[in-house]
Image 1: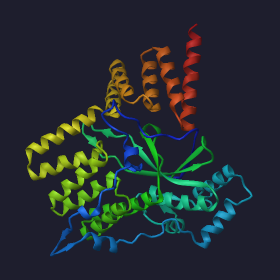
Image 2: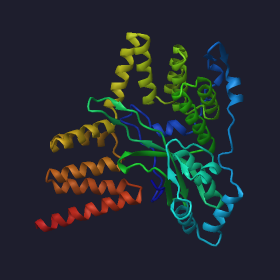
Image 3: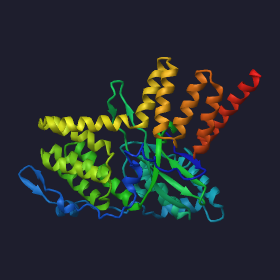
Image 4: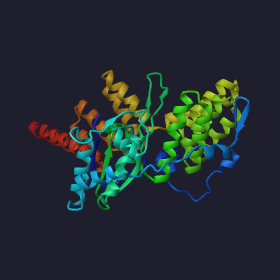
Amino acid sequence: MRPTLHEYTRLLSPARGWKGLFFAVGASLLAACTTAPPSLSQLEPIQLTGTLMTVDEAVSSAVTPDLLALDDDMREFVATYAGDDMGRRQRLRSLHRAVSGPAILGMEYDPAAEGTAIEVFHRETANCLSYANMFVALARESGLDANYQWVEVRPQWTRMGERIAVRMHVNVVVKMNRDERYMVDIDPLPSRDFAGSQEMTDQDAAALYHNNIAMDALYRDELEMAWAEAVRALQLAPKMPQLWVNIGAVYRRAGQYDAAEAAYLQALELDSTERSAMNNLLVLHQITGDTDKRAHWEKRVDLYRDRNPYYHAWLGDMAAEEGDWRQASDHYQYAVGLQPEDANLLFGLGLIYEKLSEPKAAMRYVQLALDKSSIMRERELYRVKLDELNRAQMAVY
């Protein structure tokens, strides 16, 4: 998969509140708040085989590299393909072509390819975060205003109504001016899976670097490394709920269930809609056999699902697959009521009304989608569909 470059017409904002019951996940995940961040001193030492590992020991063993450092080869690359003689847009496009083009760097996607900017540049493989490390470093060297961006991924469910785990995703945003921004991504999401975005600091990105290492180590059952890297991630970004969820997973693997529960609850203190924390609490109490707590978290998970616009959109998709377009429209109307700013939901509702032979409603919702969309490729798709609907309507008369 080759990296892609997409233009914004304006900044994509995180999903707004769902009927006042939930808050934007992206905003609560990364935005600064006035309260003091949670203290790592509250973390219990991890109980390893025959020994304990404290927070201080963990932090000292997990060293953060300079993720954005460049070497001479990278500086020469920037000078060659994004030199000062070019305008900013030309620099960005030329740099992107050089990075993605098979005749030059030919960067390829590999979900396991962690690393710093230097490592990625010379290895020529990257995952979403390590690619962001490299592209941010190269773009800044060329004088561009480039930053990390957290992407909120639209959740999905199984046919039994069970939520499928949603991956974390990071890409790069490059600003030309207040209203013109470009999104650079090695593994772009389908536009319908894009549920919002939030800029990240370099320190947030470093925290995710350690988090990824921690989760890989946990998968290999290397608890000492998983603990050390997870603690370092939290030290860098203590207000990031997902990191508390993941350190809870390390505790759970170590059999420290009380500590795991405390970590999951801390994630929910930071973001009351943190779905992974709720699901992990449900799993935890299935393990411990605490039926009262299990029932409580089952209700919370169900409430989250029922208040989630994308769950109702998913129900609409299931109805559409069965050819029940009226039922599909009911589900999408409910989803749009919960999330009226989502262009993809509005566009989906427009397509459903087209299937119901209600062209005026179809045009209305496609136009609303066009008005709300911030991504150029989306807007072009919506314009094409709106023109098609208009031509069909004119042909009737």
